[in-house]
Length: 219
Image 1 (tube, rainbow, N blue to C red):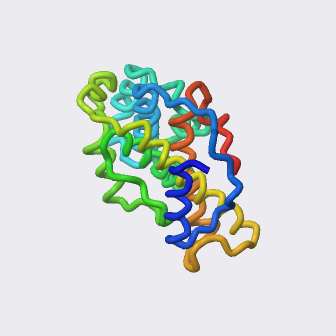
Image 2 (image 1 turned 90 degrees about the vertical axis):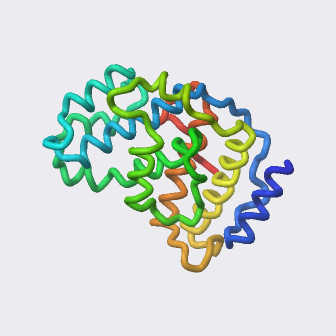
């Protein structure tokens, strides 16, 4: 068992999570280029703005031009492309958008936003605005220029955080099958969904060459 895994298991147990001790530790992973991580973050920004901001406040062309200019098409998942084809006031799409923000938090953390927590609580509106306004590229700029001004976290720190969420996700999966492996007030479905989405982003960042929808998130 690696030193990182031992530290993360200690964190888990202290917080009330009980992952399996037999989880693999030597996983072959490779970090993605920073530009890919940035483009995934901004693909999420584009779809969130599309569905959450009225067109009278932000015309369609500004969002679509930003996505095209920064070549975000390959970083928008298939279900998200349907959102960009939907009316800006589509309520069904709006109900799904919260999970996209949970994906965005770890991606924004890579570029300097605060660390994603593992309580399972969903992000607040204030946090969403902080990421969109203060930790993402403005719509009239280019992402390649934006990342030159950002300091990224170390690969070691990213790997440690991904391993922590991997362990917690295992405890969540066990709880969803009826075992007592999460804290008392932790909802395995609702709070567990938050862990899943944040873990998805962290694992994707360390899965160079694998598309978003093809991620293996088994524990």
